[in-house]
Length: 236
Image (tube, rainbow, N blue to C red; front, side):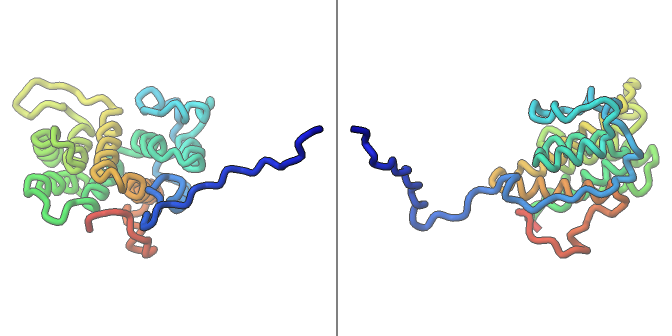
């Protein structure tokens, strides 16, 4: 005779008493909206994919003649925010990219930042406001001096320093910067800023991505100041 007793599902154990909310992930962060991104100028992925570090999960989205903007749309839908930031960092113009890195670095400055970090960040911002060779050299020197610390401000300054000309200090041999190197430095700044507080990585990455998309849309990178966005795990 067949046993008709129903098999009961194993109940999910309740969370331990006093347990807090689940850790932040991309899935439980607010949605990210992607605008026209006019600053990208219709740039195609074929122009940047060789130097854009995309994860294995992002590879299926690559298609012939795909624009960087459309790639970012697909990556945002898939909550592949690291890949979206990498793509944006290499697709956005150099000056806007350095500004993105600087805005994010300033947003996540600690309450009592080291003076060298502040001066380095100011050098990056000065180059964006006036991209002269003198300002580029200053940003390059200050960023290079503290680059090993991983400070986002250092990478923002290096992004400016690698925008054109030589990567070496003025008195040394000429070492031309490659066109993709600013994007690499911008992406490094974003990842260091997000990863500085591991438990807040995704809220910080969300804030950084929203900031970059705003700049790519012609904004100043501070949409939260206009929209009253919620907190993002920052130090300010």
